[in-house]
Length: 249
Image (spheres, rainbow, N blue to C red):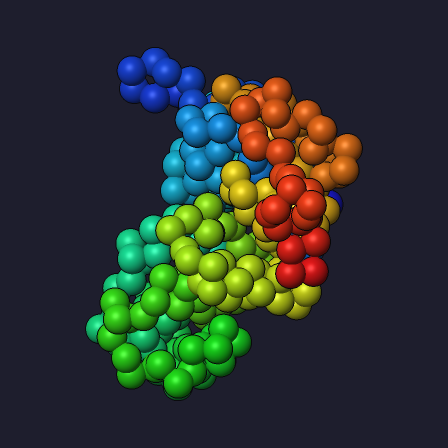
């Protein structure tokens, strides 16, 4: 049974614009799936249905075989999302308070909240920043803080929306290393990006969404050759002066 199953998913905005149309997709447990597509293709609209941030006009989303609408709170515990703008996820006055926010809203005992926060900060290498103001962190550290906040909820699936946007090189390295560790520790990873050279070597599957529809879905090596016809930049080779598909592998 797939951990995520999407059936005939469509979302039409109030003005009649179809953001996504009739998307069908299955994702297995512990997969690393990269979703690519040009700006405005519907990628972000699609992933926001996977934990109930958006409701479909038509179609269904299943998590572990259960419709997401059956228990939206439980679905959001299983499916954590890291937004492109990390500042939008900061809610605490300190780093530890910020990570504690999710478990506190589950009405867990204070000692359990504290344990989960400390474990999550340790997992992303931010334990020494527990008392710091989260807004004082670097871009890469803020992204790791967002990851820690999701980890404290003990999700099975973690979704990243353009995780490298706005980061300098050290920040990209920090975040990519963390994503790889999360996958190696057993999490299912769904990652939206146009920077394929940074992640494709670590992915099991490449999905392309184009003009609101699922255009390609397969092994990266089988799909990568079609990227340019969908307006996606092809990763270049090392001898052309940029990162290769073995970036950080």
